[in-house]
Image 1: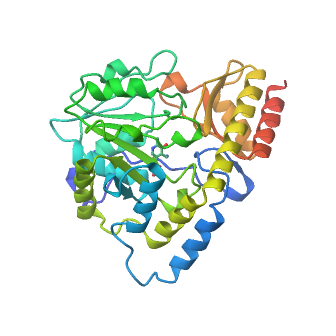
Image 2: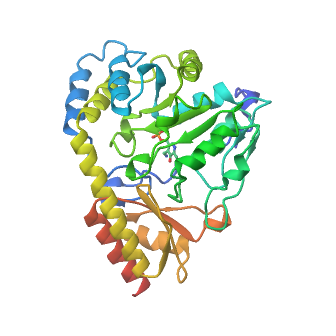
Length: 356
Ligand code: PMP
């Protein structure tokens, strides 16, 4: 990368997140590439956001008081256990700032959410990236008795594979002097959350987002759930960088989304149903499909390369995600689960491409 002569030499080694190609001519594409929800936000979320727009002359509540009260009630924790971020990306940034340093590096799998590397580089944090095993599972032994802050995405992305809570507890127990972050961006699509463990383990931070199951990716809202000491640390970082980090419309929209529990559950059930339909259909076409509990599937076919399938689908105006690196996964595509009709269209197109 090249920078202007004014750019701080503290940051000459950063490696920014690559969003290129994520926002191509959206209307004409079936967009199955960024793990968003295919469903609009709840009507209640839209109504509350519109109402909040009338007061945009005022600063937003820096403590997200009303939102956090509602969220605490939904999760069965106390308000003091929650901090909100501008997307969970911002929460992860705060975690790197608060809990990683020259003595305490980071650890996350070689195949996982790629933003961890971006943040580690930005914060100049040494990081280890243990390899997934041959079945693409996270080998927790690689993180046991660690001297690093561990970041485990559960279910992992892009594999969708889930680690059970008793295994997570083993990890927490063996790392009593380090933070273990469980990133649950995809937890609502059928997996079990570690939120219930926050009072048992003082080293646990659970991170969740409104971007997937709650249809608010553009609103940018994520949150950390942990014991109040860790939340206080994170709040100190937040108030040093971005005190008013959540805008008023997003705070209001999120309250609306939380009040509309039925809409949330119906959408999740639709996604799970469409995921199972898509997985079965792909397997019937001889794809290898990992057992995902997320709102996406990770699949490969022995007769067509990942990049070829990505390109063929792209020409047919269906956008999926292909990762060229690491090599182990470059034959796979990651397919976000959309509405059932879109998934049927995807399968029909794949069938044509394969001539099956
Ligand atoms: N964690 C994981 C595992 C993700 O896949 C994503 C979304 N790309 C995020 C965090 C960040 O999501 P957001 O900032 O929209 O909450």
